[in-house]
Length: 373
Ligand code: ADP
Image (cartoon, rainbow, N blue to C red; front, side, top):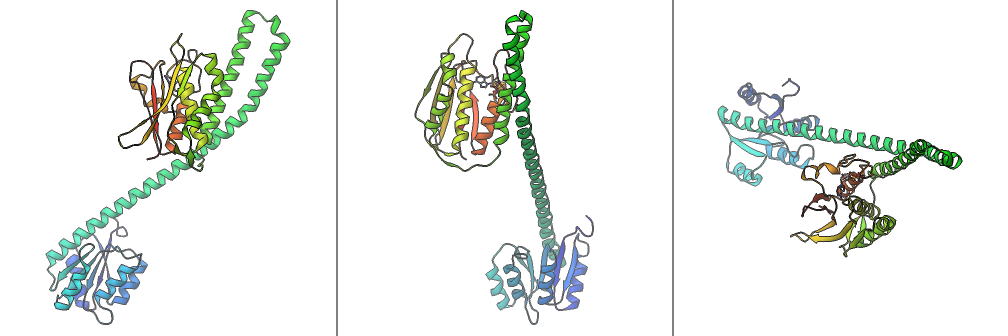
């Protein structure tokens, strides 16, 4: 420890010889000693710099040790500094000391026993070292979390701007592919037709990916929470999926859900992503079956469930699928951006909830989420 980093002890006594004695007793300890010969001087020093401990003579002219201690305890900057009173312990002093109770206050009887003084000071110095270590740790966590927040904000800003800017050229590309099809579609060789169709479907995929990226990027902005009708939010999601439900001959059942505190739009998005996955990840050749309902924990907290009878999620992937771009299936088998569940994870996190997936039977998956702590 450098001299500057050493903790300081304020020693307060109106008798010079006592100050010298205390300094000599503590000279071997890893601390700096600062003298004050009166209560007033002590208070001035205390406001100027940090101290790990005050050794305070009780009997002093003008302002005695107890008065100094009472100022120290009242001031927000000094109120937590431990004090060791140095006392002859007459009856009056004994009574006063009792009033202090325990805690950051201790006392030593005069004449001072050097061993006991060093022992007590050591304890307070160790406390101070630990306090500094904790303060540094907290500060370092705060810095890391500030940096993370800034990096996240910058990343989201970039994602937002990039997905916005990429839409325009993509739209132009799609339009020209349509025009090409109209102009020359009829005369294309089977091979050229294949290339054209693949280009158009790639445009479609990229467009959905940009949509998902935009939703993901916008998620971080805080929004106001209100009472949300969860049944209505799920109903809206199901209505918006009606074309796909019909096209895939799917059945989606919804049981009444308990309301929640949250952001209506985002909770709708959460149902939309989970239900659309339930429909999408059906077993080949089978009609998708999805059920949306709520369960209640032993503590009476609602768990919202979106359950399907599809391909299921293997145990080893059940945690990682909530990370962005984590896809378990090939694009050829199931279209997707790999962002749907990451968006769900973020929404649930913003609602201080949890999301997880289980497979109770060998078939299908059960996506569950809770909201609020
Ligand atoms: P995607 O756009 O690929 O659907 P998601 O983030 O929504 O992206 O899902 C990530 C991966 O998790 C999917 O690619 C799929 O492998 C798996 N998954 C998600 N939902 C289900 C489900 N209901 N049943 C089986 N697998 C699922």
